[in-house]
Length: 119
Image (cartoon, rainbow, N blue to C red):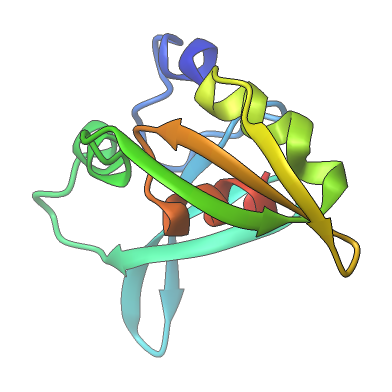
């Protein structure tokens, strides 16, 4: 994700990257909304305002506090967590085909689940 944000036109609306998220403005019921899309996934972020800037939206998606938490994940998502946080989580247990991990990250638990399921 850092490599994507370093591209010169990453922080523009309606770009079309294949390998990075895109900030799209889409109309729905005569209103315009900002979406973050990646491949076949779209996530509506907020109602569009002329003062909105993709770089501020991107920064606001990131929590700046270091969080320590335990969560249950599908084993196939273990490597994704390591990729997005840069920290290898510690496996605590296996329970009902899920892995309980302990990790620290600048993402909240909710943001981490978003990253795992969105990308």
